[in-house]
Image 1 (tube, rainbow, N blue to C red):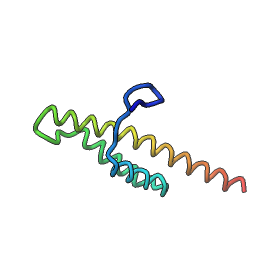
Image 2: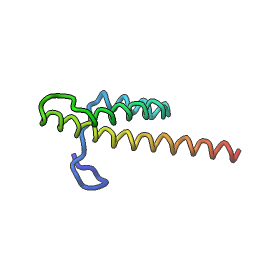
Image 3: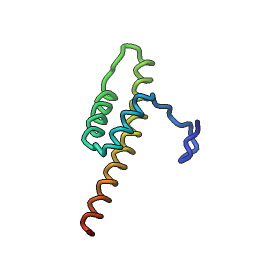
Length: 90
């Protein structure tokens, strides 16, 4: 799969992770997204398995998920700002 934004190979995410993040986006649950992001940030800073290759693989997966979470947090934040601006106009 190719990422249309930069022409590079797109990251494949596990269906469960995508469902979780999509659910938080749908709910507008910024706190949950930020909490999940904190977990993945902490995980990228620790050696989780003894094998160097496996550890690098996990860190790569976590960093890719952090990118998705950053996009989700931005989307939810922008939606919240839009709702607030619309309320202020009314």
